[in-house]
Length: 249
Image 1 (cartoon, rainbow, N blue to C red):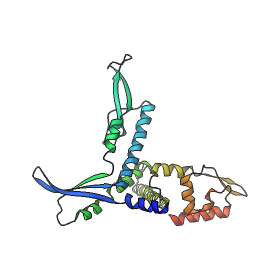
Image 2 (cartoon, rainbow, N blue to C red):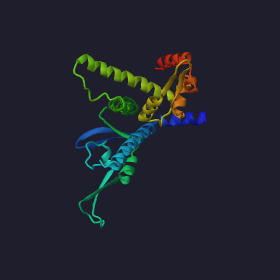
Image 3 (spheres, helix red, strand yellow):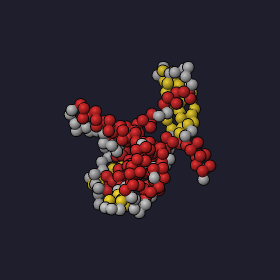
Image 4 (tube, rainbow, N blue to C red):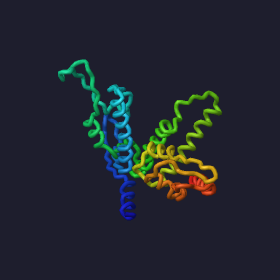
């Protein structure tokens, strides 16, 4: 199992590419097309979150076909007008656009780069651009998971403190995600797990976990402290766990 995991990680982190010179509208430049399984997994995860939002809007009756951006979940919604006799008319039905989802999924993992650089190799250009989508994911995480925006503050010092807190939270969060070594674990799922890891204080005894253990909580306990999921955690052990968390972060 360990050997298989190592081989999978090698393939997952590999970037394949092809390049050629193109000339469009008298502009000559290099076209480099890359494929990354890691990037493909990121795109699949992101699209699944958008599909979930689209399904939720259809279910609660707030679905609309007008999309505001290329990443809007409404692009996966089909709007159909009908009558009770199945004729085209004023009534509207919203359903999931499976064809649009499948069409978009064909390009998972692919990315095209255009450059007029001649001395740099394709590998150097790819490396310079490699972390672009990871940076985008971090900004998305800041805005959605840590609610860095909108900012309901006016004083400069409080605005600065707000963003410093968000960036520190992101740093700790991403460090934890790397240590878990669970590439399929979404940011939203990890945040939900962390929020749900509550403990009940029992006076004179210690703390009792009041959350349901799963693979993620077990993975967290494996490198923080195996006692995190004990039926009762003594005061002394809890202090040790807190120190371990600070040390890990």
